[in-house]
Length: 79
Image: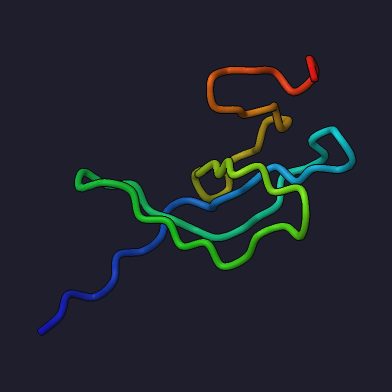
């Protein structure tokens, strides 16, 4: 018999762009972090302006302001 699914303990967010700046966090799914790894279920993405960055936050936690997240550490403000 299969084990029952484990509850998702985190909410997945991505920063949504507004023009050339990051505007707000958009909830895109849920996930779970355990000793075996990370499971993420993404059920939606922003239309236009998706940065590729996804943040898992414990359910009910307060989100910080979105900051630029670029591979290689480049800052978006310098473009």
